[in-house]
Image 1 (tube, helix red, strand yellow):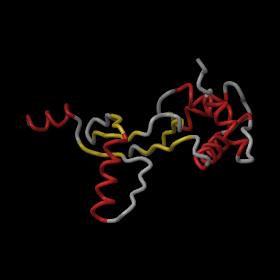
Image 2 (cartoon, helix red, strand yellow):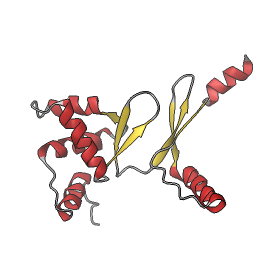
Image 3 (tube, one colour):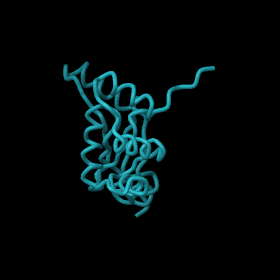
Length: 149
């Protein structure tokens, strides 16, 4: 059975085909994001990368994250907490439910948003382009506490 390509090797090949290269800095950033398997901040990425490559500064991390975003190798996630989070584009597309009271964040499948986008297209003729949709409200526990009050 053939192994699926490693995310870094796959990214390297995609970039090579487009005439770009995966620099050591970009490769380290991609490795950190892929190993983390969750949303990670630029500051967390920087802390992990600087341990292996001490001369990289936070501005370089941000610049490379935005470049990797333009190349569709990472995704930028904004859950309304004032920070941007990053994840590998190899992760399944998903969106987030965010509790306005306790700030809990729950991932939801893209299918929910795809149904919404299809509804909007059918009824309004509007082509929705949603890369990430944070949905704010109350989680089950906070809603129950509010109902009890």
